[in-house]
Length: 128
Image (cartoon, rainbow, N blue to C red; front, top):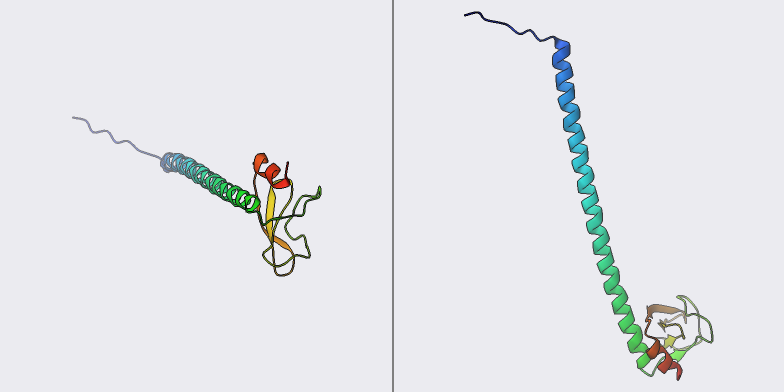
């Protein structure tokens, strides 16, 4: 029986290893990209749920304020904004005709804004 020796050149071995390394690196990069996309999607979904919960909570709070009978109308065609100053007592509830409510702080500025889109509640508050 005749024995054959296969001789590999150092260049051929290096090229093979380099090729394997590039494939491995490529797969690793794709895996990281997929993982980053999944994490990004998860964060976006979580943020959306949180924002939806917050929006729902502020809508409920604004509706309660409108229906409380103790909010002062300060709109007069102007939208209520955070930081506006009124000469009203601390913790006075204020509201406009656009669905926004807030509380007067110790410095007279509006804070703790809450908004509703419930036109019926807003119109009732305005006496329509």
